[in-house]
Image (cartoon, rainbow, N blue to C red; front, side):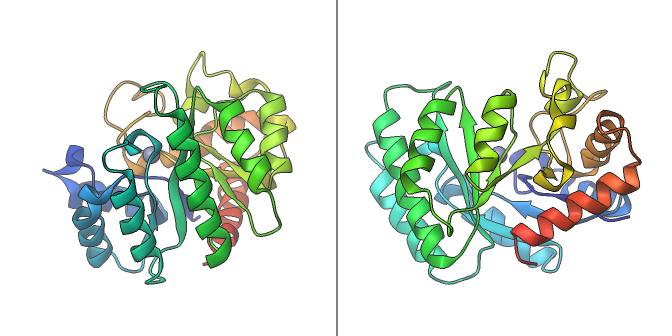
Length: 256
Ligand SMILES: [Zn+2]
């Protein structure tokens, strides 16, 4: 069995004291590939280090996280992203999108940065990895505007309803499913079995959003197996079948 964590912040300061052990646990738990989203330039060295340590297992994305789109710095940050993407060392553009939970005042700027980075992804033939928090309409507005055959990717940590899931799929996006599927009030477990398994990829978003029974504690990539177990229940199938299909989907999107 091979599992893939399509969204994990391996470089996080939360793993400063036991990063190697954390990686060992994940590899022991059949997690073979780790897709690592960018946040801003300050995390660049940490990303490079984990890639050097696990060159065959770790795959880096590049992008500017919507919470870090600020009027004073976004131009410089975007220039950095562009320069990095042009080195062709990245598997996706992410995480990018809109977050209105933390800051509503930067909405216009967030949407502009999102659109710009989508255009780069399309030109480079790369998938995008979308961060969307309290902002489905605002994310869909940009996706509609940039819609094309070249636009594809993953709606990371999908937490929407059935209609929003359908809409995401119609825009060439897969759904990234993580710990929220295991939460009692997470809601997505109620309709997920109506979404074909071919449209689903697994993720942790470690160190955030740990699945049950670790909810509220630090998350790590080995827990992607708990998400697979929950999906086996939701889809009334085996963990092996969940692993096989979601791994195939992920390898496909990231062209591995
Ligand atoms: Zn993330």
